[in-house]
Image (cartoon, rainbow, N blue to C red):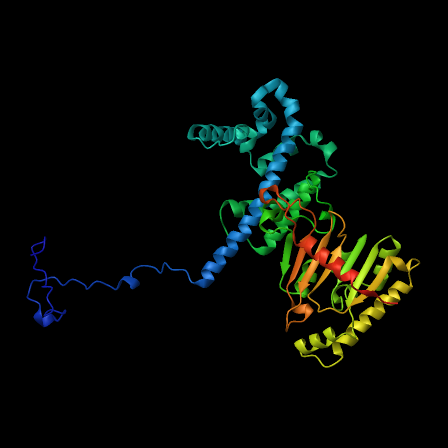
Amino acid sequence: MGSGGLELPPGDEGHEGNSADVPPGTVSLARPMETSSIGPELDWDADAWREVRTRAQRAGRAYIWLNLVEQRLRAVVAAVLRPIYEPVHGDEWVVAAAGPAGQEWVQRAVAVREVSRRKGYLLDPADDNVISFLTLPQLRELMVQHWPCFEPYFDERRDVELALDELEVTRNVVSRNRALSEAVLNQAERASARLLEMLDAGGDVPSARRLPVDAVEDLVGDRYADVVAVHSDRVRLLRRFPAEDIFGGARRLDAIGIGLNLLVQNFSGRRLVRLAEAGARVRLLFLNPASSAVKRRERELGLKRGELSRAVEMNILHMRRVRSRLRDPDAFQIQVYDETPRFTAYLVDGDGSDGIAVVQSYLRRTRGMEAPVLVLRNGSRLVKSDEVDEGGLFSAYREEFELAWADSRPVS
């Protein structure tokens, strides 16, 4: 008997739901469903995991930029307004600076600070102040209200406000953990870099004029040594880092490879002449087109006999024409080597801390255009593991170039 006075059907194997076997007055119970079919599907497939990781990566990058901007803006606002209000209002100088127009949001910040105090959320005593609890829009409001105080430090108020406007979309998306598109992330990174530059926090890496320091690179550079970018092939490299950005304005250029196509075919001879006339020193090291190493490389790539050697000869002839137009040919040296080619490298300003390098290894059946590319930054400022400079990849390739140059011979 069930609790309601009704007889339940027996559970032995002789009763499988046949109505003819069920006594009158009994209530039929449904058979349990298979576990896998109960409720919604909880598993994520590969596409779902890929989308989640992409969202997290984008949100993480955006958060780092927003964090940098907020900290810098907080410091700027404090440096300008504290000397004005603190002598009169003491620790309540932020409340006084907000004035009647900002009474609501500044009191909310005060309340959040008190809650954080009681619950032990203030882990750093330096954050135990009201300004640490202001958001980007509120910091912006303080700047706008007191613009005459900030005007001497900025060229255009409109530029600051436009950059902050562009960041507001990203800030709302990241704070609510919603999907951030690549286009919006790129806009946020550009706006953040521009705003940090306006706030005079551009960093102290000399090569930033050619290859701007990325916020993620700056914070976690110890994970990547001096590698600042990896591209799957040369086409993607040039899409993100055009030849003009790589070679333009160089004061020194050392290059080693087979035919040096990245330089010869993507940077005009006129620009090379102007660089050399402006004082740049150029050393180009080609694989000898008559060497057996060229023939082996042709076989590896499945090229016709002489196809690669003729291409290298054409590049050398082009560079010789560039050299012939210079008043000081010694500023533009061309040499060839006969060893097995192992990599191609373009070292720009490699003798200083502002140098960059573009490096590709030679793969057996992959042309240079299709080989993976590393972009390196010279100097040890970004190599932060235990603050020990163990030497990065840049110095290794620079040393290899010098060894190969010493064993090569000049082209007349």
